[in-house]
Image (cartoon, rainbow over all chains, first blue to last red; front, side, top):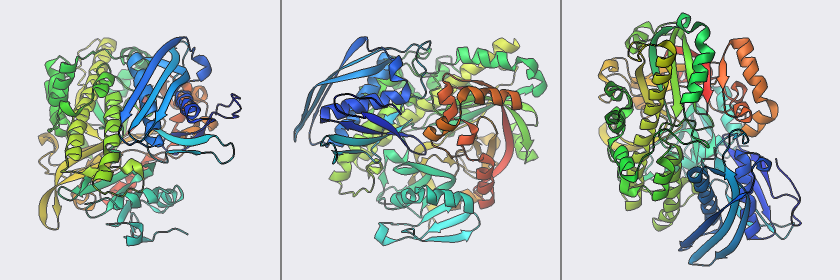
Length: 156
Length: 483
């Protein structure tokens, strides 16, 4: 579990039990922040975030036309990050979503993500996430904080 | 109080009674003893068996093998056969690691030949086997080369100098499943896959040096070229990022397709489309690309193993007798011919964490093994044992020619990590059992600890008692390489 204070949110994410795989609960003041929390949560499964120096910036740009729920968009965002992880051979620890738009027929996420190349001397990779799943997937308004909360189970 | 009713058919077979109120089109059949069944009930895995029973065109039953455990959408250890005309195909019924599977090689080495070389062997292997996480493989493919791999399977690898020609005769589909269409594989999937051929991956993937500990069927073991105290090599890996991306891409397609075809889903991970629909056909053809990629991946891993052992023993792999016994997938959907109500029909069998286990004389079994049945490789855990089994005639009628695929998890990864320290586990395995473990991550190792898994011997004993497979040999780990 990885907990800290940031922007009035006590917890950004926490790992939850799943017999075969690993899940996270995520929290955010806004949808933007919720998605950033999910990204942090996903990379925390693979590696201690404190060990990942956010020195190098990469850009993620998602534009999807057609109807899409917030949950599907969350999966797509995480898949895009996994793609960057594998293809650029980089771990990321900081995520800044600059544009977040969800309309009936247009969904846009533009983000700067920060991390560094995988270095076995420094990074212990516990397990590589294969993919976010739709199983028990959830994005909802949080009753308590008036912010957002969600849940994602990953295949590892 | 459960919402479903379970009937005992015999000590090793249970029926979840078909209940229209739960949307079940067929009953559920679980191969388990009372204890494993209770585990499945407690973990709510039966709900996932019931969910699969609600899919269109499902034939006979939603099956669960004794290593059943809670997955996402389909249970792990689930088998579902679908009618070709009225049935659906579901990427979730195959999983992200398309054609994740196992292969086993025999050697003409005995335990005495290993002597004090074990640590050196494991060290050498850890250097020569690309893990894939944070490091690329030794093979870099262009888009056109990867397309050739998708359609050619292991033939592509052999043409390019990896492995031996005869290897392909000891693989499912002779190392090349028909129906691959590279046009239906996304650029993203290709990007992820082009540098990962011949890489192990992380999680439960491994390469093990093993010793044949016990023979249960001398005749069959003889046919498979196995004898007591012989050294074998087991490799467990899949289709890496390529397969994960294909599954992700088509889960998205299937979310829309499910709406389009009016398919009501109880779990979105079960998203599917009719087999005959454009979406269903595209997924199948892309999935076949990943199946061929996974077989090539294991084939190349075996090639690196051969090279490492050649260096250690200063003998050629041929002289070391490093021959492939068999290679089999445990995450796949296949078009297969089965007997349905007295008629042979082509149907689509999903195996998610389950192994094909064809009985003797099936035409798809290598000629050398045809009389004994299809070899089935069941990895256990890194501290105890794995098994060689055979498919049976009964499996053809009882489970669409399917059996278990492994031990099944007992503890979640989070729990395992909380209770076990990887470094202590590594030391304990060496001190108490002489097992040399090489792993990139000690936390990752803790997640894969023997205590985190059920005893695989219990699982295989149930498959034997239920008649869906037959034990040939037990294999104990000597050296374990984790990704």
